[in-house]
Image 1 (cartoon, rainbow over the protein chains, first blue to last red):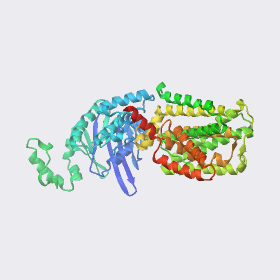
Image 2: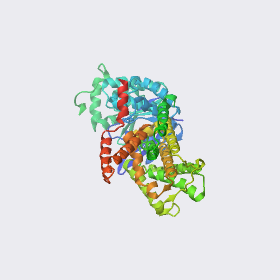
Image 3: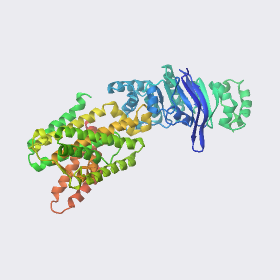
Length: 266
Length: 315
């Protein structure tokens, strides 16, 4: 029985086919990435998995049972939590109260919910900000609140929609171990991410979405070498030009982790 | 909820309860009872509007339903006023839940929700004005029969204490809500509904619970009104005046706070009474002055006073 299965999911908005026949699986205990160029349909696919959108076709299976179109609050109860790309803090509330809203899902008593919220804040590095209003935090802080709120629902699967977007490199370095620690605590992670450094670092498996279709899947190293992926990001013909430059660089120290040079950027 | 949470409420109750010992003039007690009834209606509005962020312009629908139910059960069916009062409150809750179901399920928010509630209250007003059963335009009169077991008291002070007890009960309910899961989820829905849903909050269920509770508290104010004045017509029970009173008091006093509606209600009514005594003879001038004061109060809200005190204490 697979953990999360997305089966031939399509979503049409009027004349626009945002997601087309997309299928992939997420293995229990993994960190799985969902990448793709802007407008590929990643966020729409996330919205479908988390119950905010109903797919036009296809289905979503969660631990063997169909959950297609189940509303988000029931999915949260089932153990699927999500964060939003554009952070959605409860602006008027303190960080503690923000996280407690998530904690209340499985703890009816206020004292328990607050205690859990404080433990979660500790895990994501917000312990010192508990009394601040959520609106007063930096972007990086608000991303952590977003993460903490979702974690406080004690999920089995955590959907992260670009938690690293808008952070500077040192903030990214700070939060990568947090995400890894979440997985190590037994929570499966599915993340949409643009910051490739983090994807390469964190994900065991990556699925690539382009123009609404899954065009590749595999380990990060396999995927970035896949000509279809390179073309989706960089345009037609880029793959062959890159391959030529990769062959040269593969022999040098640092290998493929160094950025390609010369006309491959075109 | 701990003892510390209840302390300010107990202090308020103790101070307010002594009022009839100092003030014995009928007009002033009358004023005090009326103010408490408005405060209670406003406390109801505060649950849905203040904590839930759903601004209703039609709380008259709940005020009037409970008032009419209490009156009609006594006048037409000979029911004792106490159970009639309870049925009235429950009826207001049911009306609130149904209006909530119809509007929240269709995703109405903000000004659309406000307009729909206003429309419901107006429909009720027109119906109550036309129907024989509610006494039509002539209104409905509860027979004067002053006995405590009949919820009619010889002294205004007794009625004052009854009204105060209900206001205090509503304060306790509000504080309990603030400390509960429902309260946290309600505030989360107010702040960001989609984010709340993602965290497992059943937004529709939470809003329905809030509107039912809100309607019951405002309904209690309506039933109390009927029992105190012993007369109702459609323009009193379902009139826009009570919808406006119910939302103005919390907005002035601090929406989404425990004491906001009571504080705002007292300020508002003291102001309107003050302007009336200020210019006795020229009709309408008091309303002009009241309007100006209202603008000043909204511009410099007294709800900042508790906030300023808190700041000052922290230093």
